[in-house]
Amino acid sequence: MSSFEIKPYPEVWQALDMDVPRFDKMRLMMGDMYAKAFLGQPNRPAAMTYFDNMIAEIHGGRVKELLAAKAEGRPVIGTFCVYIPEEIVLAAGGICVGLCGGSQGSVPDAEKILPRNICPMVKSAFGFKAARICPYFQAVDFVYGETTCDAKKKTWEILDTMVPTYVMEIPQCKNPRDIALWNEEVKDFKAKVESVAGKTISEEDLAGAIKVMNNKRRALQRLNSLRHHNPTPISGKDGLLIEQIAFYDEPVRFTDQVNSLCDELDERIRQEVAVPGKGATRVMVAGTPMALPNWKIHNLVEGAGAVIVNEESCIGTRYFKDLVDETVTGMDTMLAALTDRYKEIDCSCFTPNNERISQVVKEFRDSKAQGIINYSLQFCHTYNIEEIRIRQACEQEGIPYMFIESDYSPEDIGQLQTRVEAFLEQIGE
Ligand code: SF4
Ligand code: SF4
Image (tube, rainbow, N blue to C red; front, top):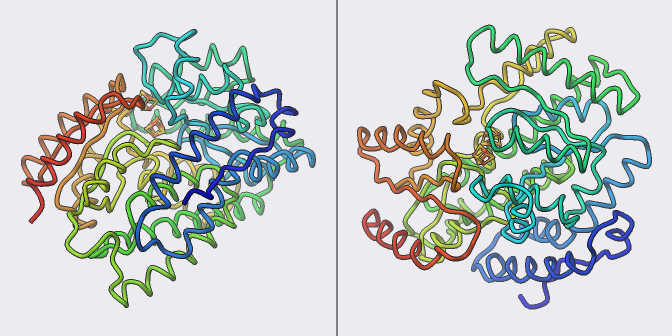
C-alpha cells in the first residue's frame, strides 16, 4: 500500500504555468488519502489495477494526452455539469473533461474572492483555477458552464476573467417552449465547438460520437446492475471511483476497461465472491454529486462494515441512465435527439422535478438496498429543499432514510460517523 504514488510531472506543470510547489504538496496528500481509502480494501477485483493507474497518472499521463490533442488542433473543453452534450465535443475530434471540484484543498483560495456561503463544489472548482493548482483547468482551451444554479451562473462571470468561459442556458422548467430554447442552446454549443475545432461536424461524426457515449453509458449501466447483486461483487468506493474517472478518461478505452471489470464481476458472482462480505448492510446514496476526491460518505459507510450499492447522483446514475436515440438521421433531428436525452436528467435545479422522486424510489428497489442516505452539499439550496420531498416519499414507501448535509472539511467526520453507525444499526438485520 505504501508504494502507491500519484506520479509527479513538474515539467508539465511548469509548462502549464501552475504553482508547482503547492501542487506537489497536494499530490502527496491525495496519494496518501487514496492509498488509505482504496488500497487496503480486501478482495478487490484485479481489474481495478487500471483505475488505480488512472489515479497514479491523474496529474501527468492523462494531461499529456490532452496536450497532445491540443497540439493536433483538437479542442479541449472543461465542463461542470452533465447537461453539456459531450457528443458534440467528441464529434469535433475534441476532448471533454469534467472540472467539478471535490477537494477542500482549493476552497480557501476561492474564499479569498467568492463569498464563503456558497456550495463547496463551486468553491473548490473555482479555487483550483484561481490558485493555478489543477493541470486540467490550465490545459483547457475554454470552459462551458451552465445556468443550473445561482452559485454557478454568477461564478462564471468571475471565472471568465481567468479562462474563457461560455454559458449554456439550461431552462428551469421542461415545458415545450423550454425544450425549444434548450435545443437552440445545443445548436449554439455545436457552432462554438466547431469554430474552435476549425471543422464542421458531419452527421457521420455525430452518429459516431453518439455511439461512443452510449456505449460508455451502457458499460456504466452494466457495472451498476452488477453492484445490485446481493451480495455485491465490488465495493461502493470502487464503484464511485470509476464513476469519477468517467469524467476525465478517454471514453473508448474507459468503456473497454469497465466492460473487462464487469466480466470479472460476472465471474465473481458465479463464484459467490462478495465485497466486503456476505450479509453486509446495503446502502444507497442519493443527492448532490461527489466529485473527485470526495470519498467522505463512502469512507464512513464502508468503514463501518456496510456497502454502498448505488449512487443516485450526477456522478452516478444521472450520468448514464439515459441513452441518445441512435436511429435518427439528419443533423437537426440528431440535435433534437440529443436535447431529448439530456432533458431526461432529473437535476433538482428543475421545477417541478417529480421524475427524480420516483427515480430515487425505483433505484432503491432495483439496488436491493436497505436504506437511503440522502446527501446534500452545504448551501446547495435546490438539493437541500428537494430533500423534503425525498424524505416524504421514503416515509410513504417505508424506506429507512437519513439525510446528511456536509462540506469537504474533515470537521464533521466524528459527528457523522456516530450518526451513520446509528443508522446502519437501525437498518441492518
Ligand atoms: S447536480 Fe445538477 S447542476 Fe450539478 S452536475 Fe448534476 S445536473 Fe449539473
Ligand atoms: S451541488 Fe448544488 S449548489 Fe453546488 S454546483 Fe451543484 S447544483 Fe449548484
